Amino acid sequence: MNRRPLLIAGLTTLTMVAFAANSLLCRMALGQRLIDPLSFTTLRLGSGALALAVIVRRPGASHTVPGTNGSWRSGLALFAYAAAFSLAYLSLSAGMGALILFASVQVTMIGAALAAGERLTPRQWTGMAAAVGGLVYLVLPGISAPAPGGVLLMAISGVAWGVYSIRGRGVAAPVSMNAGNFARAAPLAVAVSLVGLLAVPVRAEPAGVGLALTSGMATSGLGYVLWYRALRGLTTTQASIVQLTVPVIAAFGGVLFLSERITPRLVVASALILGGVAFTVLRNPMAEDATT
Image 1 (cartoon, rainbow, N blue to C red):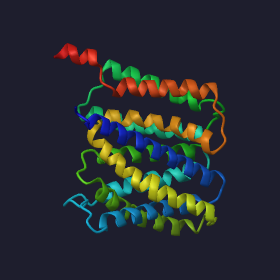
Image 2: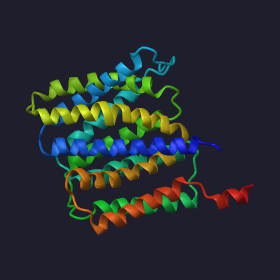
Image 3: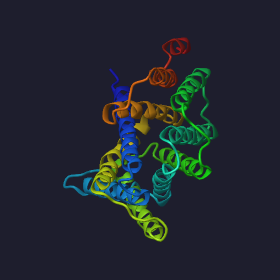
Image 4: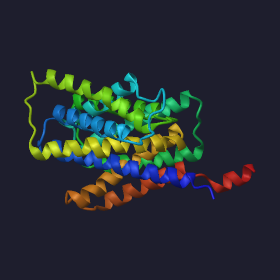
């Protein structure tokens, strides 16, 4: 029995949970103004870099492979994603932010896939349309005209995350690669924070610092390692579409940890998104039989 598909599915599921948890941590920290966005980004990337550096350098570790210690392009993409993400949520609602972020990720990754020669089947187009429709339905209530600056920042964040994900496909040593990328992104965050001191007051309550460190070490640092490993078994199109499950997981996380309510809209949207993702990613046995 080939267990690789099960392994990829498990890694992908854990990664999506980590991404959703990251959204919740950011929402809790910035929404309650426990910390300013630049400090949150700096602590997030710095603690992620530290955690990954410890893992790479621990006795007996075998994560380092020549040529897989990160790159400045990936580090810049990681920094752009994290910084723009935090700043955008100063003026966007959670729903509108999620819609812009994942729409930007979709355009970036599917555009890159089509440019590289991947072609979506009618089944994949149908599943993606259902998933995107579910996402829009999930975040639509209460949305008003968003602030242009927030829209631009979140679009930049989505494009940067799409680039970071694309560059992670086929990586032989995801731990050392992410460690190198975080090590490059963290100084950029520090530099921007120092410049930002001239315009934005620093706010860093203990609870906000704790949320930022948790986001950096666990749901970002380790979560991105899992993501790079999962990307080995996913096409660019599949990797793009499965990320549409993150808002659903985050919404149910809000029910569990932020006392938010389960609504009929959430149930219907979740069914559309999860069903569309499954329809797109899972193979069609009948089609496979027809080709054998």
